Length: 197
Image 1 (tube, rainbow, N blue to C red):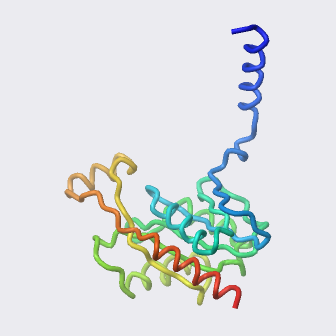
Image 2 (cartoon, rainbow, N blue to C red):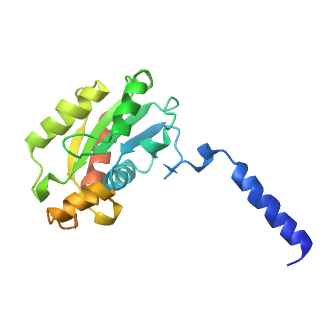
Image 3 (tube, helix red, strand yellow):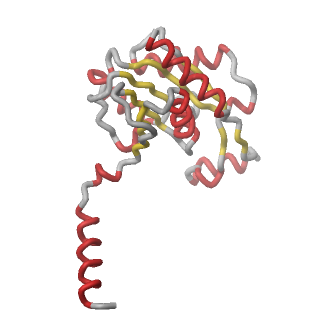
């Protein structure tokens, strides 16, 4: 390798390390829009991320999708959808903390709520919506009367933390995937239709 090429590569590598962490945030930009929509999710092993991306697709891709672990600044958004994976009846602690810290930013902007849960692989009914949305996520967000949905989730043992993976293995819980893209797309369309009517 020539000395000049070596120096160029070295300088570019060093410059890349100096780029602020914010630039590398796990932000998903499906389609640029002036409508200022965002989907914020908290997940244990990826189900809520995929649901959030599909919800945005159902809204014709106008919503930016953010992982709460990146602590996104949503102050520039006018319409926000919030969702989270459920474990023991609760969304992830990072999502709870984010909502509490940012109540003033979120107030009046939440247009939809969603939860993703395994529900012991049984169909979701009104009791899950009441327990997971109305009595949990809606209360955290201090909203009522926004479109909301509970989706069945999935388990990928390799994506779980060690403690959860051990517990699921001991309980002989199989890996499964019951999250349906079509349901998430339909929910995105419902949210957008209600917000624009």
